[in-house]
Length: 156
Image (cartoon, rainbow, N blue to C red; front, side, top):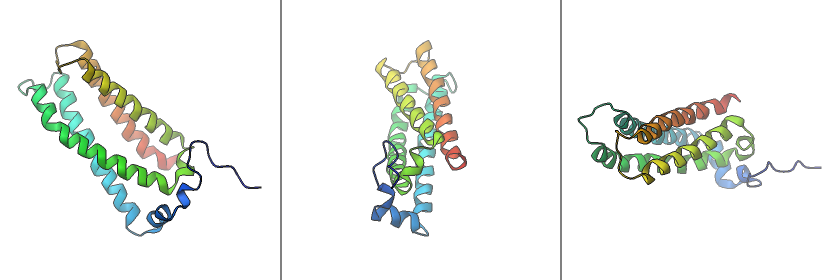
């Protein structure tokens, strides 16, 4: 009797030819990890600057202009992490879908997205508003959690 696939995983995804090729390649998997980390550095680095500005640091920098300048880099980094993350996931989907650190990472990513939507739905980025500062602080904490859980995946 064969074991049933893990819940939510695409049955056999890790056995698809592109997944096997990535996993077994001497360079593809490590290269994807590097791309994933570069994307994460872009996302977190740009968010760090904007969130610190919203928390009152570097008051001489206008928050709207800083956010506008950072946004293309943030989105490019996010795109890199999504594409590389999906490809990395495909190589070991059955293992990751039951990994508690991976599940926490996905939950924190969702929370970070909801938090960002909440921040931007309130209008202009005004550091004088308590809600803006709360969203900024929560964003930093959520992204630190995403990074921590991402590193923890290998140890759970």
